Length: 113
Image (cartoon, rainbow, N blue to C red; front, side):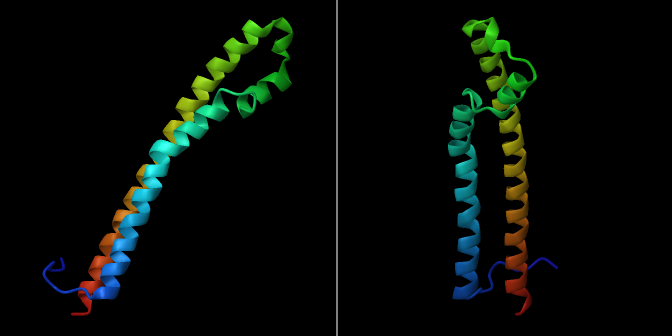
């Protein structure tokens, strides 16, 4: 059942496997380095959806800027941690799926011989 790795795959299958292993690496790089910067920018700003929702429920800005900034920083930290956990879970799922797809391509390429 396990394909032998010494078979020649052919140029089309090699190009497909190279492309399939390249895109998950780029996607994982974006999830690891670019997304946290964007999440940090939006989490600690007034555009944070949790901050906006809480401000719509109760206008705490009338208590002063120190209270508003303290709530914004605490909600920003909670939002950043929560979103980072969600992105990490999605990244792990993408890696598992792409690994399985590369195994399938490798198996299909050896099945015809």
